[in-house]
Length: 109
Image 1 (tube, rainbow, N blue to C red):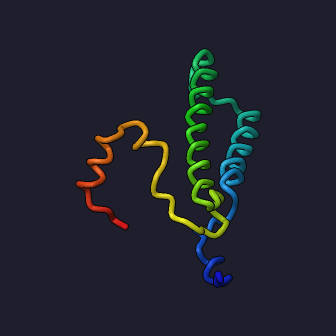
Image 2: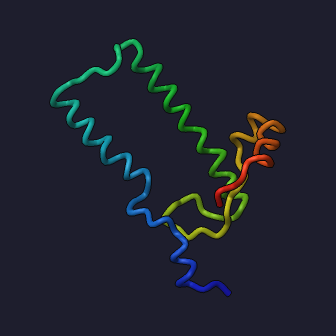
């Protein structure tokens, strides 16, 4: 049986969903942009950089699947039920070289 008080305390203490944390300042920035335009990039680079950033954000999708495989929620305001120690990133990219590195280096947890 799961201790409800203990399970509910196993969150990271997030005040708001991450989407809201990013959407609030983004909305303020867009409103300020309507008032006073500040160009950070030349117009011809804005769309390609925006698309690249969007695609970079898609690397979170495999991480969500890793959380689901461990039957835990990726939502930081929900209790953690499992520790996800594997993922699609470094092991998938560097393979055995990264695994050998992990065996050599002391873990901090």
